[in-house]
Amino acid sequence: MGCPMFILNKKLQLLKSKLRMWNKDIYGNIHNQIKDMSSELSGLQRLIQENDSSVDLFNEVKKAQLELEKALDMEESLDTSRFEEVIPKLLRDQMNTMMVACPSEEEIQQAVFNINKESSPGPDGFGGTFFQTYWSIV
Image 1: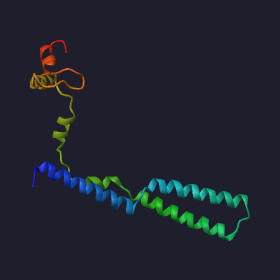
Image 2 (image 1 turned 90 degrees about the vertical axis):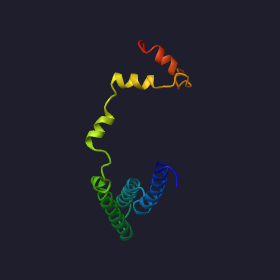
Image 3 (image 1 turned 180 degrees about the vertical axis):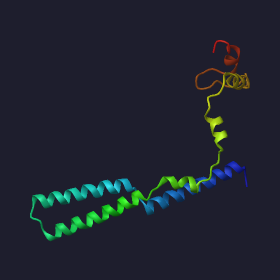
Image 4 (image 1 turned 180 degrees about the horizontal axis):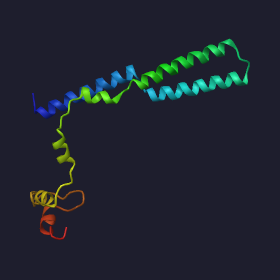
């Protein structure tokens, strides 16, 4: 089976791909659709003003208006406030506050002194020995 976090990660990856397919099938990129439909409608209305107002153009405008209204309704139905109902709160407010709080100087010092002195240097080029030796300066 494997580590529970590995299993969770794989399940989330599968869910992500399924959600992307569902979103593409149901909504597509609704914002691009609205933009495209609006510009198409503007173009048709410009044609009516410039040319003779034919019945075919009026029918195309009516059709474009209906499609735009449908897309706008779909966009409006994307109510993100429901996400809180669907996705349970995984962190209590107290835990969340603790996680986003800035660490204290003591916590940082404890973390630095828990680093293996002989560990390889980090991206800054300094290893654990440097920080532990020169802690009072750093």
